[in-house]
Image (tube, rainbow over all chains, first blue to last red; front, side, top):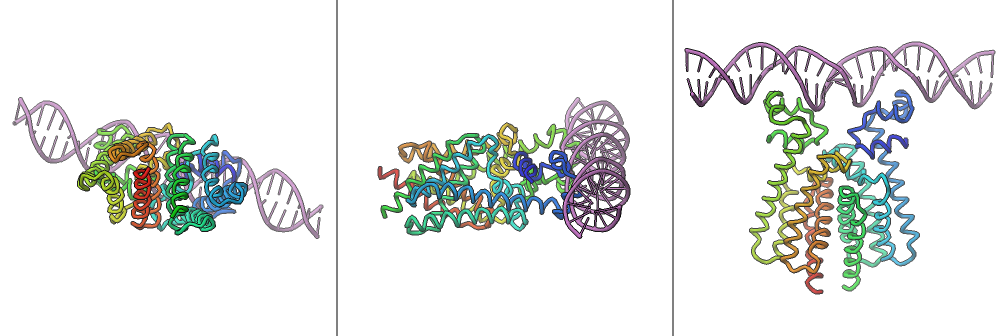
Length: 179
Length: 179
DNA sequence: ACCCATCTAGACAGGTCGGTCTATCGCTAG
DNA sequence: CTAGCGATAGACCGACCTGTCTAGATGGGT
């Protein structure tokens, strides 16, 4: 449900109540509970949907960046810059889910982490194609840069962190290529 | 209040109710509300206290790292490795506060961000002493690495991200020194 | 025309939320 | 001794929480 995504993303997963959500969406309570057993399952479904859309959008921009592996990697940061610039940007819902459900065994925490792992896997692939000596380690570093930039962009409502992280990524790629 | 910190950090700021907290601490409700006007003010006080302790502990380890600026900077990452290894590690309460109160104008969001800014300022100082060409930019990058490593360490309950981020930081410092 | 699945609205339950209030207790300073 | 301050326990408030349930409206397929 688009409304659920909007409210959860805007206000937080725990902060939004079922009633609020249903009123905003104009949907009856039973309709919701016929589709999802609980609020938790709704959240899991929303996260899953968002994960797919997120990665599809990101990979589309990567694909549009041309054939050069380094440019494709840097396109990841350009994509984030565009995201940070979007009007309703409120950080990464997965980082926020990890924060709101801090217990690592919680299903929502784990689902959010699966997204981060999936993104990291895509980065690893890109790094490998770019000929990195240790693609997994480089992807790990790049994902730190990205997550840090997301948090900073959220708190400052600025797109600058994307360029900052991109510049560092470019340095690291060059350094790796030189070795 | 030590109990407040423990519960807030373990379960989340929104997840812990006042009643739960008071029962755990063995304190009467009126006592709490004589000291703090609201739960929000209690949270702000807790965050402020944690900010001071956090930075004091970090800077103590930096001071113990000896006189060489690069070693002092890398000590920041060693300090994080020790933190990640602590039994009750559940990520960074400030990142989590930014997530739980996603609206950038919210007092708690802003208080959490002030902590990140303060840490970044300390990093900038260390970078400047280390002779970085652009200390602010380098500190920005290092803080991305740190925040990303914290999120990953939280979700995976591992100390490895500290070493991973440290290695990247060492590369970047070397790169800067070579230029 | 009818059936049945699916929607709606809304009452209801039992519990928790943050916050206020009263009344009593214990300590300590004068 | 006593006055007063700060703590206590705990009732209480209205609002909200997730989740269940009933009862009626809607609409498409046969």
